[in-house]
Length: 107
Image 1 (cartoon, one colour):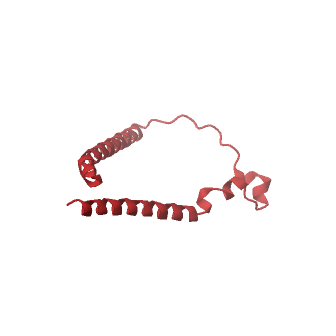
Image 2 (image 1 turned 90 degrees about the horizontal axis):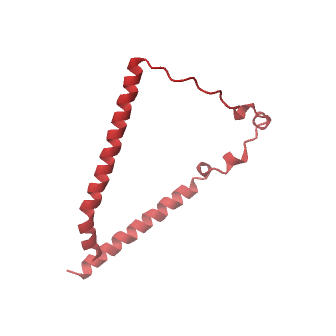
Image 3 (image 1 turned 135 degrees about the vertical axis):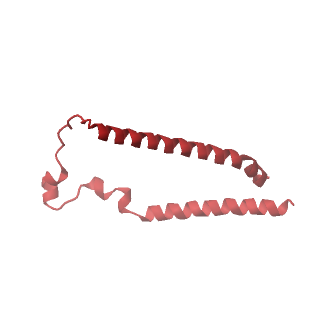
């Protein structure tokens, strides 16, 4: 039953995904063409505001200490990315297994 529903819905999902992808790529092309057209015409951008003081100017950075917000970032602990990928892979495997078992039961 699940496989039948998937076969009915899959073409619509693919068509929707293809149209969204095509729209996104077209917008990127138009944006790129506008940027190159502006560069060719020589338009200048308005002056940038002054930059905020950098973290290298702080006394903590000079002493070699890193702020706590950088230590607790998700990029510093890649084990969570690996575990989430493993969990997602297991979930997809179980779904595919259920679809195949359902297909075998109903000829």
